[in-house]
Image 1: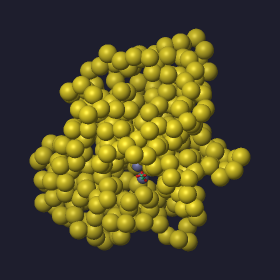
Image 2: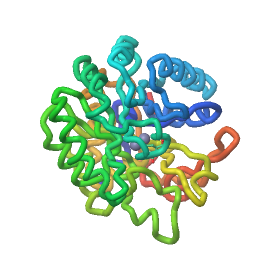
Image 3: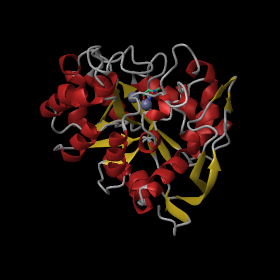
Length: 355
Ligand SMILES: NC(=O)N[C@@H](CC(=O)O)C(=O)O
Ligand SMILES: [Zn+2]
Ligand SMILES: [Zn+2]
């Protein structure tokens, strides 16, 4: 712990992996992100998924309207849109996305890997060549949910196997394609991203930096700690924390905040996803402080992401202070409620202001 530091002001951070959903819930969640972050990469796994630029721009309009409803000042928060890659995404669609200036990535969901991935890719190298070629040529990053879906592969090994079976051949075939390995959860993933040649980076969630898989099982089955990729062993958490605090520009902040109604988490077949947008920066600061590396938080949260995406850093600042933050038990949301990650627990840091 870095006890001497009692407050920290950093360049306004960005969230490079965020689920805002759609409809009434949008206005309930977007304010939580906008209070801390200047921009966010908005995930396209709606029902139906956001597969075209036209759909992405319409979704962007709905987000802007929700920001106004939530009372967020004009220009205070910018959604960076993405497309959902399918077996049928064309090179023309990629060109339209780049021309819009508002779409910043294309998301790969292996079919069946996670929440709302049914329309995802069945065979990346076999079916998506046109789109990948265009993305490589035009500099549009591929954002990857990196887990194989082979039922013979143990759930806890699906990211490590993805590195061998998909990521390595993909990057050999498209060496100049910009790739973000989203929500990295394993030592194998970290080793790959740290050492691989070419334009690659990874996002790291606050929950994977702070908690290991015990959180899902100790004291009973804990549905609010279940997300994909699932929390892993402690040695993986340590590798992620080392990477986040190492100063390597290849690792940056992506919350993967993914709200689900309470009733769909606390169910016989509970949904994957943790809601962390509310207290994201308090969670990250608590993790970096525990590692004694608060000095690295600004690079991770505010500098490395824009550098990879070719965007300027934000103008404003965010200030955090050491002090107990008690996570609420539940948040009202549209006509339902969402339970935030670590509900009822105390964190060591909180957001105290922004400018
Ligand atoms: N992370 C999750 O567990 N869930 C995400 C999807 C995803 O990012 O894989 C969701 O949309 O709910
Ligand atoms: Zn994912
Ligand atoms: Zn996600």
